[in-house]
Length: 309
Image (cartoon, rainbow, N blue to C red; front, side, top):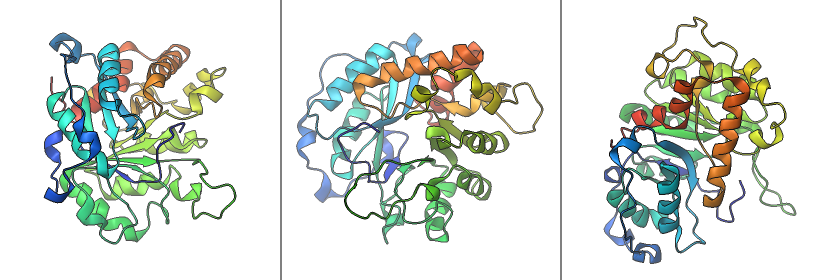
């Protein structure tokens, strides 16, 4: 949540550049003039062990964002799901077409707009700053579309930043509590439900919702891994059911409770490696098996998004 660019927009999670269609009058944007050069694609052997970051916000203030992202993704062996403002969607889709192993384009949607159903493409995310709780019937048409087309949907969960300190604003964290995702996951089982921030600070609710719903996962982006850096082992009490029989499917049949996590950074490009280090510190503190670590850092989402390689 440290970006200078907007987070009040509601964004669409798309799985590949071909998932986008663009009105002819919306294809021109200054960002589209960025020229990509050089071979920054990962080798085939690296694709099997790559990181997938589900939570990278497009930085409208950085004219070199795409080239900077490609450098970071090359260095970290990473695919970035880029949450993109509507006006910048073509440059991200073009970059994804050239570098599909490294960029998953993400488009724009306003969940409270009257024409929201006509805005959506393949998936949604990050949904936040909503005017009603996520389970409000007004949003049902969007979830019905997502369910029909098996979209990935990324929801903000937990405490949310305050943009205006001297003016009233219609924002409330309770509308985005993690337990709302349970109803959505059960009613719409074809949606892959992603919860950003693991419900911070309601981690237990988030974990239990994920435990009983095979289509629910959470990332640990935001302040959590910073504020809990001295007590990361406490997460073993929250994700407590490793090797227990609880009857739901897990990625690759993995029996670790931590397999319900996915990697998301939600930071500037220069901060992604640091968040990756925080995840690895969590793995060490909680004795997360190596196989589970690979699924968290990329394996689960690579398969979900049908990424190349």
